[in-house]
Length: 93
Image (cartoon, rainbow, N blue to C red; front, side, top):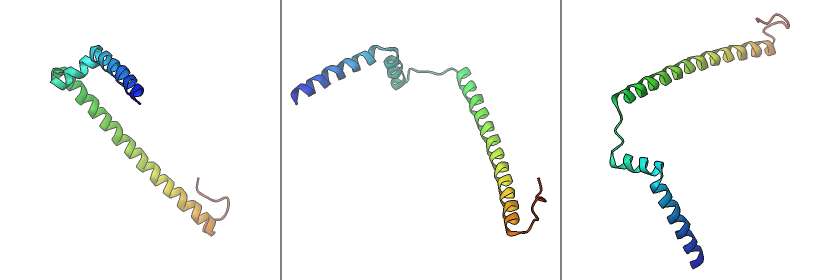
């Protein structure tokens, strides 16, 4: 049991040390300290990108709604055909 703990502390400590001296560790530490100041240009680019994503999402929502309407129409036509409401071969299409 003590051998396993020793191995965990050795490898865990080594990993933590390597992470601390790596660029990722430094960036993480800067972010925690608040040193990761973002320029106005970057903020504007993110806002534009965010708006583009929202616009794309709205387009996809409209397309899904249109597909839903088409599917409902198709289901109604098929149901009428099954119930005998339409003669075979005269289905709209």
